[in-house]
Image 1 (spheres, protein in one colour):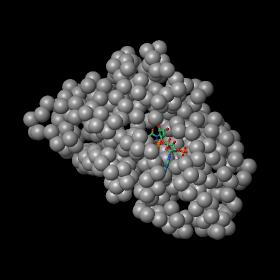
Image 2: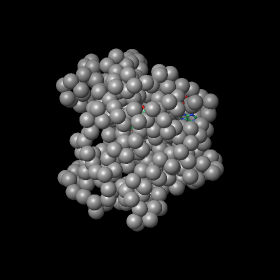
Image 3: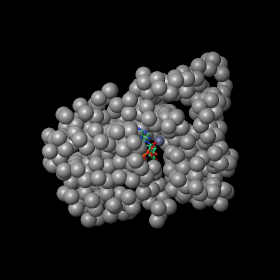
Image 4: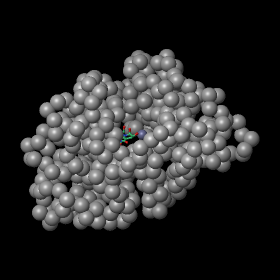
Length: 384
Ligand code: NZQ
Ligand code: ZN
C-alpha cells in the first residue's frame, strides 16, 4: 500500500426528497446571497428550479441566477460566474445539474475569491486556490461523481486544453435518484459508462493485486454493469437508477484510490478530444476504452482476466483478451457509440484533428505501460 491521508469533506443526502432535506438542514449555515447555477434549461422543464427557488426564498435568501452552463464547461463561463459572484457578494453557490454545472461552480468558487487568474495559478505557478466560496450540489445527472470530489474538468478554448483543475469539494450534495428519471437514455448510459470507466481507470493503475481498493473497484464495476442492464430493460427502474447514482459516487469519491496509483489514460485521451470537439464525455470514453485496452492487455494480463471473471462472468481459464472483447460487446449491447464518427460532434473528427489531440494529450506514467504520443495517435485512429 502507498501511504495516504483520507478525509471526506462532503455531507451526502441520498434518496427521494434529498434536495429539500439538504437545503432545510444546510441553508442556515450560510449568509443570505445564493448563486443558483444550472445548465441549458432542463431544471426549468422538470420543475426542480422552481422548487429550489421557492425553498431558498422561503428561507430568506436572495437568489442570483447563473444559467446556461454548457456541457464541457468553458473557462470563459467560469469567468462569467466569478464576476456575478463578486458583484452579488455571494455567500453560497448552489450547483444544480450534472458534472458540467458542478465543475464550473467549483472553479467559480475559487476564481471569485482572487484577482489572480486561477488557470495560470494552477498550471503555470503550480499553486492551488487558498480560498473558495462554499458550494453545495443538487445532482440531476449522475456518472461523473463531480459532487463528491474536489476536481473540476474545464475547457480552455483559447489554449485548446480540457484539463482537470483542483478546487474545493462541495460542502454538501443532494442525490435524489428520481431527479434522473427525466434524463434522456443516451445520457443515462453515457453517464453510467463514465462510472464504469472511473472504476476501471483506477483499477488498472499500479497496485498490489490483493489490496482492498481493487476489490471494491471490481464490485463497483460489476454493480454498474448489472444496473445498466436493468435500465436497458426498464428505463424507469428507480432502484436501478438509485444503484447507478451511488455507483457513480463510489467510483470517484476517492475511496477506490487510497493506497494505490491510478491509470486514467483513456480519460486523458477523451478530455483532449473534448478540447477539440464538443463530444459527450461518457460516449467518447466508450469509443476509446476497447482500443486502448487492446494496446495494453498484454501488460496487465492477470488484471484483465480478473476483470473478465468478476465483471462479465467469464470462466477462470478465459484469455485476458476475452475481457476486452466482453467490454466491447457490452458497449455495443448498450447502444453506446463504438466509433468516433458516431459521436455527436459539430467538429469533423479526422486524422489531422486526431494528431493534434494525440500530441497535446497527457501521458500517464502509472498505467500498465506508458504510451507515447504516436501510440495515442494510433489508438485514436483505430477508433475512426
Ligand atoms: O444543460 P441542461 O439543460 O441541464 O441538460 C443537461 C445536459 O444536456 C442534461 N441533464 C442534466 N440533468 C438532467 C438533464 N436532462 C434532463 N433531466 C435531467 N435531470 O444532461 C446533459 C449532460 O449534462 P452534463 O452535466 O454535461 O453531463 P455529465 O454529468 O456527464 O458531465 C460531463 C462533464 O463532467 C466532466 C466531463 O469531462 C464533462 O465536462 N467530468 C467531471 C469529473 C469530475 N469532476 O470528477 C470526472 C469525469 O471524468 C468528467 O471528466
Ligand atoms: Zn469521467
